[in-house]
Image 1 (cartoon, rainbow, N blue to C red):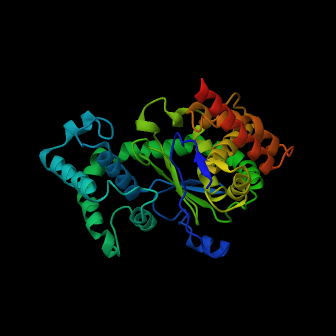
Image 2 (image 1 turned 90 degrees about the vertical axis):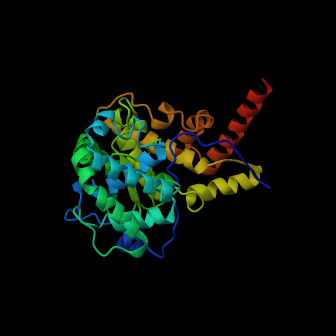
Image 3 (image 1 turned 45 degrees about the vertical axis):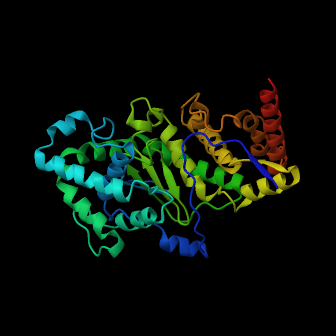
Amino acid sequence: MRKAFGTTIGIIVFAGLGLLSSAQAQTQDAPPTDDQFPGFVAESERFAFFSHYWLNMHHFLHQVAVAGSEERSGPVDTEVRDNFNGAERNLFQEVVAFYKRNLVDKDLRSSEYMQDFKKWVIRQDTTEFSSVPRQFRDHTDRLETFDSVYRQHFWDKQQASNENIVSDNLNLVRTTEDNVSERLSSLAHENWPEYKIRVDVTYYGKSQKNTAFTTVFPTHVVMPSKGQNAMEGSWVAVEGSWVEILYHEAGHQLIRPRTGFIPETIEDVTEGEGEGLRSLWHAYLFYFAGAVTRTALKEEGIENYTMYMVREEVFSLYFPALQKYLPRYMDREATLAEATRSIIKDVHERADWGESE
């Protein structure tokens, strides 16, 4: 039996699979990207950016519940809490308690309930809900009850942050998206989606690490406007980093865990070698998205950009081998199978040497 080796370090953006029959079906089922839909901020040729009110409130409350207590600093500033009146504090505690009881254990990306809720809620008007499915009624009742508190104390700041991160990066997206999407598609031997990819920008992302995440078939990206723990100096503040992660997230439809050229090549090589590397497909996505974005940013005058996986030490055990062998594939000096075989051998040799020391 083949063994998996290694661990995944860093942000978790594993894209869920749900196969559809055709590209046309994916396009028809794609999240709305028209500028008439609620929360529209801006668009480029390949992306449409939204800051949706209800989705942001939902992420905020999930973040508070995941943090463990509405009394902690972090998602809720002390100054904001001190400005609550008695009724507002009660409403806040009640809605957070609901999230803790019912939603905190549901992952924003992989939970079927959360996926369905996201697909539905982004189509809702920003002032009220309509035609609420039965499974969401308790949930939306709590959100509507909390509406006035969220608008009064949180939404202006969060919306401004979302709009600013889009404004700060939109020109870079527009000037690099053609080259990056074409290059990633070529490396992955997969077609970039024909439809415009919807990107929902939320003040808080997924989990306490506050990460971006993606669902695919069709592709729908969620990007935070604040980085890990919403701290200054986080990854979103690094020039070019938000753009790199955007391309990484969109690339999840090109490079997937089990199907497609890259994972199938890894599988073929692993069968021959007898021992694989855990989530190697994801390490390839990090590397390809980072390297291609770095080249595109350099063409835009951003010199010496450090890829996300280097700065944040994502797949740090694999990176020396990726850096050594994947450029040969990217430059067409080796096949992906040849590069993969060398990477697996290199990582195991270095790990064995390290364990013997």
